[in-house]
Length: 386
Ligand SMILES: Cc1cc2nc3c(=O)[nH]c(=O)nc-3n(C[C@H](O)[C@H](O)[C@H](O)COP(=O)(O)OP(=O)(O)OC[C@H]3O[C@@H](n4cnc5c(N)ncnc54)[C@H](O)[C@@H]3O)c2cc1C
Image 1 (cartoon, rainbow, N blue to C red):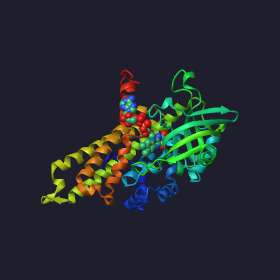
Image 2 (tube, protein in one colour):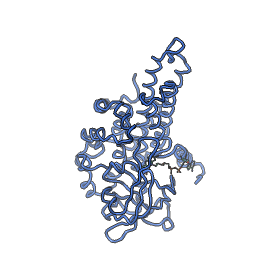
Image 3 (tube, rainbow, N blue to C red):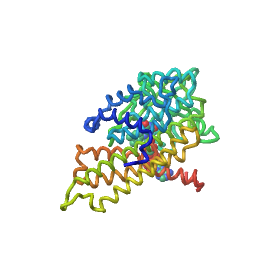
Image 4 (cartoon, helix red, strand yellow):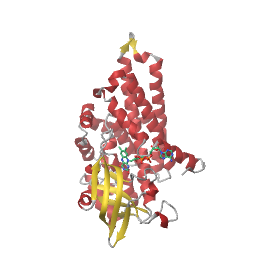
């Protein structure tokens, strides 16, 4: 079957080969144990895939977000979960595009070789939620250091990363003209921070997504770890957030194809009332509908990637791709679970695991409501509601 996703076949073939060494049972066991897919992430790192976005002069392969998104899509399409390692992809351009030459030299070759992992991004806070410009974590300059105090929530892969990109307020909200000003981003050395004022508390959650509460008590960060100009961090973090939305759109598309393939196979084989259940149009139509929606979402995903790689504004397309893809994968997940009947609930079919995993993306990294609000206000010019 020819799909929008047939482009970039060489990357797809290579990722499929690698994923073939980690079959469904592997991901199922990792999920059951609530463990981290260490061997899988190591294999991706050794093969260079998690250095895709690092320019060649720093030891990476210098690919674009488009190719990175194909890697993520294929992992999910093969039954895995890119959530274990997508942080390195979406954080990368924040450092590549906005970091100083000194920072790029210091970190990128080591990330490319696998010596360091850049898997974490600390933005969300418990008391402000999606209202990011109101975050309360502060970073105050004292000599050659910034001193960080505050709290974050849902910060993923902290235990499996060496570095984190942290968003904090460096100028009080009351002292800036625009609420998006006065925020800054920093590279945090996680091991060092855990000894000097950052506490990490894991949050047990519905998916096997390693995520945490973070508490900062007088954490000192060297001033040289500031990325770009102080006060401009919100602008820089959008580079990461747009990449994140686009990559997660690709992951949802991978999930969508996985669900459609899985259920299509099943309904051809499962015989009830003397014929395959897939012969009933009541069964066929939701699957066909889900497939159409995945394909349509995929077009928007490639458009978002194209704009991102061309350094053009892509916020609208990144948001719309994420919205469409998360919705399409969720529809596909529902059809897949529904037509597996009771077997959909049995862990050994992997449907319930993928169902949980793809559900996350209606909420994170940005909820569907907030995307609708963005499009209504920023694209259509409707009155602002907040
Ligand atoms: C497993 C997991 C991993 C995560 N990893 C990270 C991470 O690594 N780093 C990080 O920084 N964050 C991370 N997050 C946080 C994630 O980005 C947020 O949960 C998400 O942005 C929603 O924010 P919130 O939970 O504060 O919801 P809230 O902002 O409290 O919103 C709750 C709900 O209310 C609705 N809502 C809110 N405001 C409005 C409005 N104005 N109009 C209409 N509806 C509205 C939305 O439907 C939303 O879903 C993660 C979350 C999860 C669950």
